[in-house]
Length: 495
View 1 (spheres, one colour):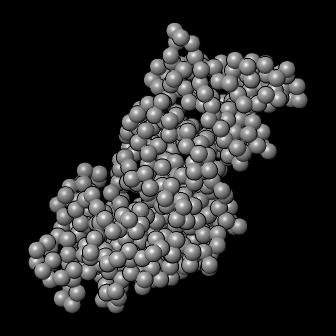
View 2: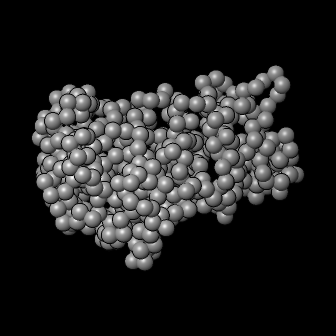
């Protein structure tokens, strides 16, 4: 492969759960090097550009033991999988002992085989990196105390939940500034030059095994955030931020390596400027799930260059399942929005089939849930249609939805266009639970005086309209609750 496309479509897969289910189906031990062809095909439907194999690194036995003693975690495990057994609790994939592919998953050889299988399909591989902390049994803890935020024995005595006394050192436990410390991890010091160099080395090694990484809670390492979180424990902030220092060095070895930031607190633009290719668009997720079309439209007024470097999603392993959160019709409308916006797109394995259980990442097994075959067909048609059309290779433009004084329903209609070598495309989504009508003025004045054909990419319908109407008063749409149109717009005189 020559690298990921400019706006990749990513499919997140819980690696251990996925391999366990393949093993259950085939009756054979299954590591990443043993995955049958049909299983790879199932997670790479047409339109997927990369697979994020979540949780491939060596997890911490000590972190797992801490989790098993945590009553609140055990309660969450049994809520998700009532009959979960202790042997099916693998520990957190974000409590990492070493950045080596877990032997239980096939080790480095299995990971290499997985990447090769994906590349044969023209699909890239993303993996995780956790920059903020490591497991308490990481070799770094005993070998490199200079990498960590350290305290005193008085700190450990006063607040044992926030500090770990190893006998030779006192380390801060990992945290973000808005929550209590995490009991199973040790805090790295983003201001330490040695830690920055070590991070670049680890990421350079990871870059030999994949095409990109998703960096967990990336904003925690930013100078201003880290200083607010740790104060004098961290020491004075360096002149340069953490991420420009690290990413510049990694890109010397892997110029095409893609970096995705899990990002919150409206810091996406700052992280993009610090070198990230893409940042989570959690703000859009919240607006789509909890707010209305006007709120979504306001978000989409942001500059297009910025939007092209966001990751749009309706769920991931940290969020509730879309089928649980959204009514069925709204889920499909929201999927059309996500699939046709600029930026990277993230889908979560099981989302296409309507899984409703949000699985704690500690677990190897999820409950059986009957797949929604109609929902799967819808998603596969949507991804294939958008990919096959080539629309997202063009220029995107947010369009106005206009209405009438006695009919304000147009306010619920979201609309945009794509224009490029692949053609002209128009999208309209009624983001409400009531019927809506609107006029959408399309941006192609060259269609005036001509016949225009609209082809529905998600169905069989074709419509003929006047180019004067489309570029004048605008395309008239009448949409059912949560209704959508994804049109290819062609000059009818040439068809």
